[in-house]
Length: 260
Ligand code: HH2
Image 1 (spheres, rainbow, N blue to C red):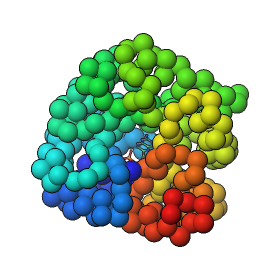
Image 2 (image 1 turned 60 degrees about the vertical axis):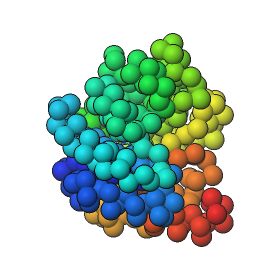
Image 3 (image 1 turned 120 degrees about the vertical axis):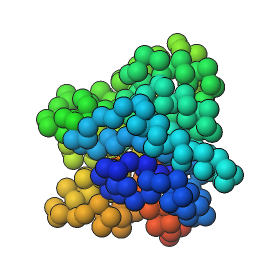
Image 4 (image 1 turned 180 degrees about the vertical axis):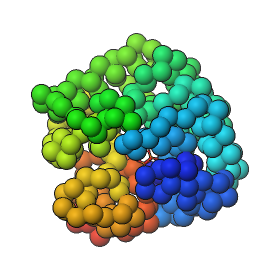
């Protein structure tokens, strides 16, 4: 899954493909490299990010979605939003999956997804982006994330969303220390077994990489390390959410245990 951020303040690629033409060029490159999904987002969720209004988010994502629809790409489109109104407009504009980092806190979200017959990615987050990295705390992070995702799956089911439409994500970096992130990544096989749905994982360019290495690295300089993680994670999840799709695809082709 290639990340197409239509945001001026994304932590890793802020504004680089914000306009529809630039986003479309990036989308073509990602699809040519093998992306099966393109995840379009108009609100940054990086630690410390400020929320934006639905109007602003729509102004950012709708032109990109229109450009993608016009280009007739082979990848499916997901919309990275926590707002039901943005999700509804994006589903109308060609998206087929809602990637909601709040796991449908917006009371209208599950209804919007159910009535569109769309897919839904439910992600775990502790707290809110603005403060989530201040002091993440868990008894057992894996038990708590598993219970949370099971609970949100049940809510989706009650709203009329078929299990087959659900993808689950432990939410790497969303209210988690490095130790929490590593525990969750090592528990992917357990989560998939326990929850019975495909997993989506995002480690691309995240802060856990410089934290693991004990060095400062700017986001784009984190790609080689991201790809080493991608190769190790590919056997244990259905979808990897990545910035550098050509690099990730090359790494997976070279990985002995990857999706070669
Ligand atoms: N991570 C980010 C955003 N959305 N969605 C899912 N399902 N899983 C993730 O791990 C995830 C996500 C943050 O990464 P990025 O899009 O690069 O940053 P920003 O939110 O600043 O646009």
